[in-house]
Image (cartoon, rainbow, N blue to C red; front, side, top):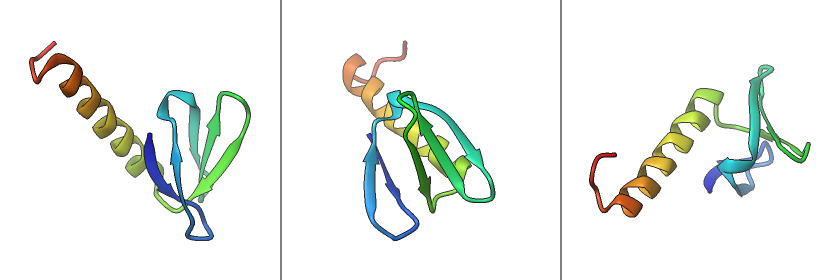
Length: 68
């Protein structure tokens, strides 16, 4: 899950496994696999960094910190 901020400044947590694609239009629009769309304040690059960081933490916990 990644923590994001909607345009109305409400915090949401999205399951990064369900993200189909991210657009900058200039707002950041996240489309999930079910077709739901979320517009967030964070730029697309920041969303990707949050996802990568989340997956690193999960991988680190699963592997006990060992490199894969």
